[in-house]
Image 1 (spheres, rainbow, N blue to C red):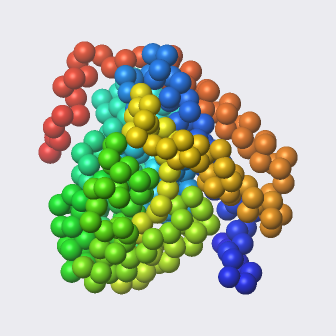
Image 2 (image 1 turned 90 degrees about the vertical axis):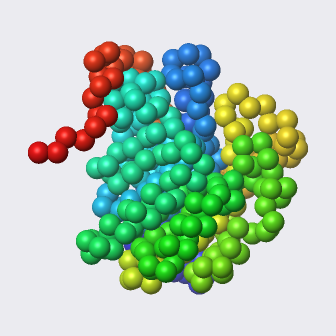
Length: 331
């Protein structure tokens, strides 16, 4: 899959193109969700993850449909990176019956069990213990599957975070905990709300590895998560990875981000922005040409616009659908 040249990982062209395409899919999807929400074509609100693409894609590059992820209120990118269908995801944004949850979940509750997407979650930290349950399933059934729990820096101060890490550690569950530290829990700065500077330091309390990495560098995410996934598959237990990252939009799309400095607001205009950073890597190693990258971007733009139109044209659920998918029928 990869080869090492010195200390730097060199991706194959196939893997590099996949990573670039998924990062662009997330960026274009989130930009379209922002536009569609503001002009009334989609749902009333959304929490977008543009700027954080490297974390989702660098992680999911190591996962198959048989592996599990749990997500957050900012979960569109995770679902796309894990293989979620763009049409179905966009339709869910609009509350349409063709959505991945038949229009009943919306932005906060995206799921696709066929792809191992156990669900986004509107409760801060709510997906972390659910991921432990998925990992326990994999352990009991000996499926060799791995679970990944995505969560934000705010969730690391939640009791569910600590309980889940402790449980996963003592049972050596095949799970990787991915903290997307975008520096703000809603509008509150991490530096103000947390007693520790590095969330990864909390791993020592549970006798598991913890590491903080550059979440804007998809290669660093890819390398670090790859080692953690392999460790989990080998029965060696969980790892906590803190990815320092950045969200372009505010907490929600209506957030003016008045609590940020101008420098923070404009980080996406610098070379540290994750897609620009990956492009530089691709050019440096001459893996993919600029022309090929432009073709991918154009194709993705058309695909996402088609997904928006699919969502607009799709019907809303019927009134009687209110009573379906509420209970599980046992035979």
